[in-house]
Length: 441
Image: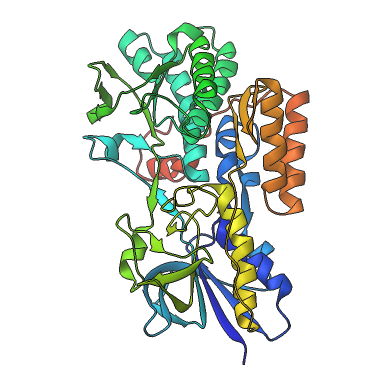
């Protein structure tokens, strides 16, 4: 009888695992089911470039059904996992809930944005974890340029041209750098505005940005951003942003229309509705073989990895160290996971996951970047080229690789599009106004 493998989460790790194991399964050996409310996987590393218009947003997402043709795709939200009954409860996008029985369960729901109890944050800020947020942010920045150019009120203009990013990790630095670079390019077409009128603020509570690289490279990045006019605030926190009135812990206050929160991830809250063992941060407890463990013993048929799993880092001298929530670990854990689940199905022995951190690459706008790979530090254009080359090898499917290369090639020959399509977010607004007799222009 075919084994039933259920994968909770269709992100980078879930897609990579399902794709790899289905290529190696014998006919009739197992049926793989992937559960996720979205029908595509977002390649997170391309969100800054998608927001800046360097690549088409749709080229940063990979359709699950196209890649995982040998899998069943269930569009819905996992509401409960009961390992005692070996069932996964799913609420489909539409219709009654359903139960999915399993023999092997892979739990990789990914993480969600980690927020803080800042007054006004939920009402005023936007995250930077999905392609929808990236598109919204691109449109928002360009729309604010239109607002600033049309008004004669200095306060309104200053507010529209102020952009605050909270979080100085790779996500925050790349996002603010790419979008500032796009706005710098766009403002040439606004004779009413000048570069000096734009205000870009990066707020980081630590005393440095980019903890993923050495301190000297982080300082170089901060200096480069400062030379471009960005205001990098270290050892500083966002205390309030009610109605767009930003208050920082260093006493600074100003008005702002655009606040972006990129201050890290936390495990999926779905894990609380399971009978799986969790650590004090809400992550699934695993051993180095990526098996879920309870009281030091592996639970049969349950595996986990990725952002919501506490996986020991065997390459660290610290015996308590865990693998970080990075795409680098996700891809490699998926390979080990596929190998181990397949070995278990065939009576073999799973292997331990072991991967030393290679390094990091980051884009700081067109032709600008930083990189630290195998201890080698690179700056400027070479680092930007390394960033693109690395991610080209990592984005899944030949289809997406070709599309992204085409986007980059055309960008070398043609100017960047700087058009705001804000109506995408409220497509029925114009029709509703017409239907109710309101003016539409």
